[in-house]
Image 1: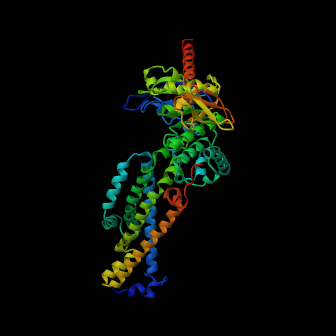
Image 2 (image 1 turned 135 degrees about the horizontal axis):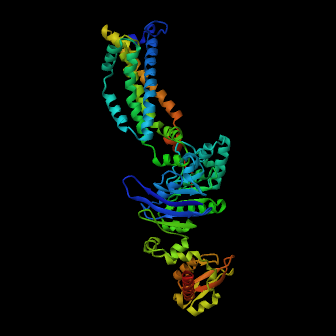
Image 3 (image 1 turned 90 degrees about the horizontal axis):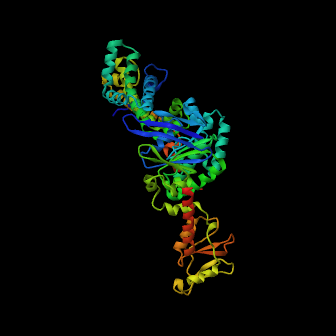
Length: 229
Length: 354
């Protein structure tokens, strides 16, 4: 394989138009916006369904339907309806984010120990307090799993933006294929893969810091319970 | 005082879970709800803090209908302990215990101080404060559960099978400490259990429920054991209830003889220089070369049940009484004990007809 494109310092000049850093930045931008919008939609819906137990068919079926939807097809449909631009790309990617976040939020909420929720209510927490102070933090490990998988999918799929004339790392793939420049294609694939790995590691660190040690078993491993007094 | 006034609960599509329940739980006492599963005892308990709403009838706390207050406010004023403790796994022990004070508007610092205080009360050292529930044993979790219910010092506590998820040894010690705590605090407590022995041990008053959510008997443990209202209660309380009711009398009324009287039974009690019992000799135990152990002793503060048990299990049919210093100060012969129990039955029979 020819890695000359990837290691050519010219392609790493942040000031040059179409350089790898610039494509990387726009790629991250699309991904971040799609994750933001997708989470803003799926999280509250998942929390509501999990908390009330109503509409669980929606969480399950939306999850399955969303997974089987081809993003490229959806993107073409949106472009046909809305014309070229950022909006159709964001819609297509957001649709990709919703299923994993929705299903994992719902699954996280459903997996909670019912006696803990009963205790929370019995002590006089209002429904919103039960949700925010007990159910949400307890569901967080499962929820973060869904969010991480959504992030990986979006990073990989955001390459479609290039198919409708936008930037992002997909440019390297599309242009490379069009020009029969396989060195460029390789550079695109490697950078996307590296980005996905780095991002997942980063999200793993974030998860570690926001999920209570009481839930992960870390606390149990580091300190042994003392004998009964 | 907690009052149930003609309370009925029918779950949708089901028969009555609680059927015209009327009773009064005395202030500052432990009232135990006991009965077979599906008898409505937990449902009744949960109607006190409105976790369940009655189909008809009223529940009152100190004369005030529980529905007069907003649900959350009502519950913050009532301690709540459940079977598996239901601790928040994502919060440390001290944060768990501080929950209700925080809900009531205490500052973080005040709530934490109150939590540490009450943890000490239930016998958990300060070093436990920053642990997570997963790091505690079942018994320790249950203690934290009790501490959490006590943190805001509520006058009323509801406890749903609080000690049934731990092993018998831990349960025994939790029960003992619970009684010690209650002697200090004097809360009005409603406690649900399916274990009649626990009911008798912990209850000042016991409400026996039968299937269909009806109250079979409401009375003190002694009344339950000595005068069960009907065959259902008699059976539920158990076959050895006569023996167990001996726990309500102390041994100070038993006729005690001087140790020398054991000679009448062909036995001799051997003492060490300090007067403590070493064991039995003589024809009654087959004239052994070394004394046969007595198998235990009692003091005047022990129960009649303990004395009877000792007399029955003693190799010579004699229970040995010791003073505070451990020295023997008398014996109780099997025959004398039987006469004493007979006269006791005559007395309680007279009370019944009176």
